Length: 289
Image (cartoon, rainbow, N blue to C red; front, side, top):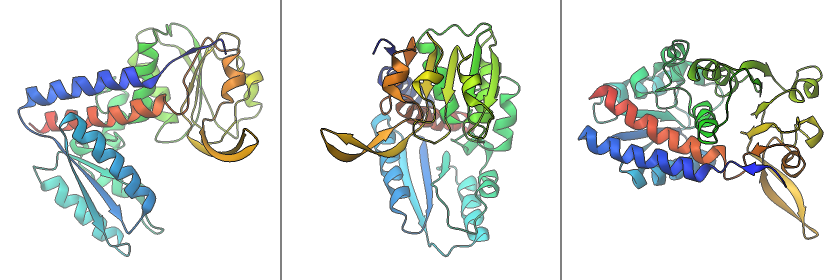
């Protein structure tokens, strides 16, 4: 491997340190409330990780478990109660929600100033005016990684492989709005015709399609900066045995031979995304102070 690793831990630690300092300045303890429907093991696993991260920096955390048969109206009424509760400074919906629940509509019922994920239409709209204080956590993490790595985006051909509402679309806007030396940004996705033609011209390549190995080594431009947002479980052979391993959307070893810088999976974007959730929780508390 010749590419320099852009590790997430140093950036995540710096964001957490700043969050702790900001909490001391606030003079109050922010509280993040997670909302889950039913006995969902995956959602509870993420909730446990959120609680651990929150407590590390001095943020209180509560998990509200609603019955699995709760209706859309029940869930939205619960969120409305949290909106009215001054002690709950941040609210996060834990996915997946049961079939029949419109997650997008529920997300819109969270007050914009308690929307720690930055997915409310009001917060998405603020991105277009250059306000990144509550931008979606993962794109915000990518911007932080690029800044920390000293990547000069002035005029750079930047390709985003994702058109999701959580990562791809806000990522494009944040790249254009957050950095004065605006890059030229192209948005692709897994159905893009001749995806390789786009990725091979990318000086900065950001991949968040949710498909293991989507971008192979020969699809990476020589000297490119590669940010791999994907988190996938894949069956791989290690020492002759087949094991489940966490991998990204980029074939890491092959891409690292061509890239100048690359993020590892795990240990890259994910760590910074979690730290951004904490940063946003503190920002929400500040807005309500």
